[in-house]
Structure formats: C-alpha cells, structure tokens
Length: 131
Image (tube, rainbow, N blue to C red; front, top):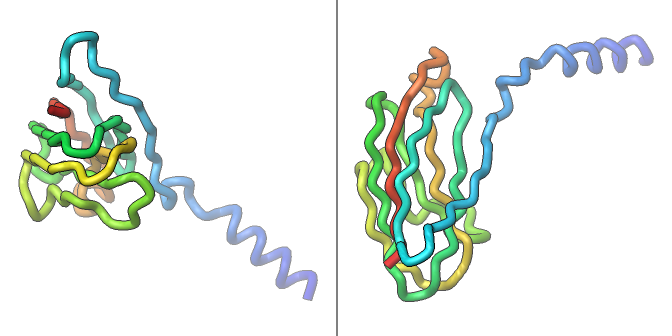
C-alpha cells in the first residue's frame, strides 16, 4: 500500500507545470480625464492575461483587439460569473457590451489550444474603453 502511495506521489510530482494555465492579472486604470486605454502586450503558449476593468452599471464596455496571431482572442467576463458575456473566438475582435451591474469586469487575452500547444506567441494591441 505504501509503495503504491509513493508511486502515485511521484507521478503527481512529474506532471508538467504547463498543464496549469499561466495567467497574470493586471488592473486597467484610465488616465485622469480619459475613458479609454490602449495596451500593447504579448502572450505565449498557454499563458493568458486577465485585465480587470472597473465599469459602472449602464456604461458600455468597448474592446478592440488587434493580434499578430490569428489564433489569439479575448473574452469578457462579469464579476463572479462562470461564463463569458462576450466570446471573441465566436463573436470577433471588437465588443461593445452594455454593463448591467457595476464591478470589475475581466478582459481575458489568450491563445486557442491549437496555437498554445505549439507554444506560439501573439503580440497584440488592446484598446479598452468604458463610456
């Protein structure tokens, strides 16, 4: 029994770190007197970036995404939600979402699995506006 437990622990230790999504989170702050921000960044493989944007109820969250890799997309998720309210891979590279309730919304930039598993890179320009 002890031998099987030790073998199982060794196997778990051998699971590659890349099996877990590597996501970093950044908070988006608009400069005083502005309501938009343009961000230049890049992602590689299974890494993703979660941009947190504070938006008030009734505002429209606009996102424009210009990636260098055709397999790069973005999603928009409401605070506490399990599913995205905008899915870039099916809805396109621009979004205009009327915000139903105030909170920190997440704009997630990622590579589709086909590109992520090949460890591809995508440079991008992301413009986020809340009006």
